[in-house]
Amino acid sequence: MSAHFASGNEKTVAIVGAGSIGVAFALVFARAGWQVRLQDPDAARLAAVPAEVAERAAALKTFELVEESPQVLCDRVGTVTDLADAVAGVPLVLECAPERLDLKRALFAQLDNLARPNAILASVSSALPVSSFASDLPGRARCLIAHPGNPPYLIPVVEIVPADFTDAQVAQRAEDLFASLGMAPVRVAREVEGFIFNRLQGAVLREAYCLVRDGVASVADIDRVMREGLAPRWSVIGPFETVDLNTRGGIASHAEKMGPAYARMGKERGQDDPWTPELVAEVERQRRALLPLDQWKARVSWRDIELMALKRDRNKRAAKN
Image: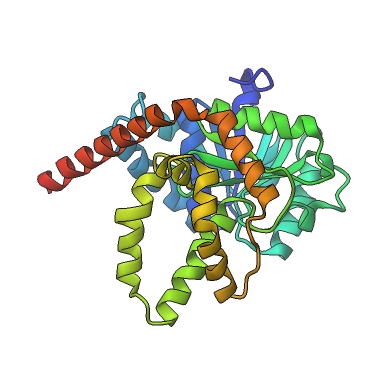
C-alpha cells in the first residue's frame, strides 16, 4: 500500500458515475480493501448497483480471483446521490461519467470546488485528454487521466496520463495508488488523443473495417484471425516482443525483412510513416536493454511454454463444455 494512503478516510474512494466502468472500478477498490462511495444522480441506476456488484463479486470468488467473501466486498461499496457527500474527505475522486466534453468540464469544475485540496482528481476518459476539460481550474495541478481496460477488475492495465500542468508528484501518487490495487499502471509520456490503449486498438479496428469494406474478409473471419492468431501471443507478450522473438537476429532483422511490406500497406491506406533507420535503431536499443540477444533462445522457449499452458487450459475448458 502506498504510504500516501494509510488509514481511515485515506482508503475511501469516490467514484463519480455508476455505469459499467464505475461499478467495475468499485470492485477493484473493494477487492483491495477500500471503502467505495459510488455516486450517480440517477437513483434508479444506483438501485441496480448492489445486485451488479454482488454478481461480479461472486464470479470473482468462483474463479479464485478474490480471497474474501463476496459479501465482504459488497459491504465495502456504498451508493450516494449527492456529489458533495461522495467526495468529502477522500484522497481520490475517480470520474467515470460518459465521454462528453461538456459533462466532464462541468463535473471537474464541481469536483475541484468540493474535493479536499490535496485529493487527486482522475478521469477514466478513453480519448479526451485532461487538458481539454481541466486547464482553467484553480486546482488543475491535481488533475489527470487514469484510463483502464474494460473491465478493470480483470484487465489490470491503467494509463496514467498527466497534462503539462499536472504536478509530477500527483502523477506519481496516482501511479503508486493504482499499483497498490494490483493494477498495472503505465505512465503516458505526453498527452495524445486516445493515449496508448485506444491508439493501438484503433489501428487494428481501422484496418479491420477496411478489410470488411474491401471484401477481403468477413467480420467473423477477422475476429477468428485475431482470436486464434494474434491474441494468444499478445496475451503473453506485446507486439514488439512478438516480432523480436519471431525473427532470428531480433527486431532489427524483422524490420529489415518486413518493414518495406508494412510501409507499402500503410501507403495503401494513405499513411506514410516509414520505419526510419533511426527509429528502428531506437526500438532495437530498447529491446536489447530488455532482452540481450544471448537470452533470445531461452525467451522463445518461455514464450512457447506460456502458449502451451494457455492452449492446455482452453482445451480443458472446451472439453468441459
